[in-house]
Length: 172
Image (cartoon, rainbow, N blue to C red; front, top):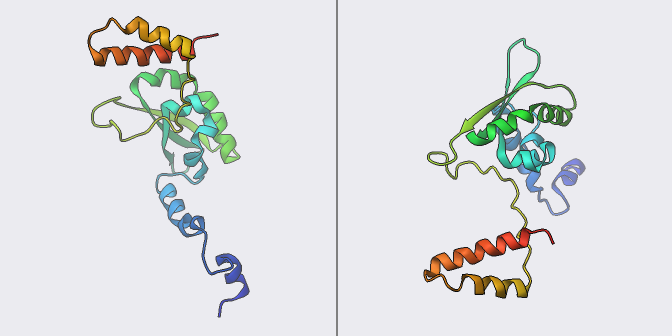
């Protein structure tokens, strides 16, 4: 017979929420990489902002023995490291706000290749971007007329796609 406390924890029909079942494993996996606050991993875009999250991923939080503060290691593509370097004070402030105290005293940027061995291994864009706005039928007809003279079908369709993308983002 289940106690009243066990019934409350497991729900009306004896089932547990998935988050309860996985909570220990998620916490242990995060702590093995130094993430005492798993929210830093799961809500990275909310903490540092969409633009910064698009070019970076938190990799590790390292604590030194007897030292004050921890080191946050962030992974980025080589070309974005300079831009990320300028954002470090803002990132440190926001991450420490997530922890609730000045837990991170240093941030280290690690660069990876944009292609090659790391291709597809790390997804830097945490959220898919919005689909481009549709262009008007009048602009679409004009665009198809402009690229109609291109003989190569692949090139013509690529030019149409490029034109739609440019025209959908153009200021009205």
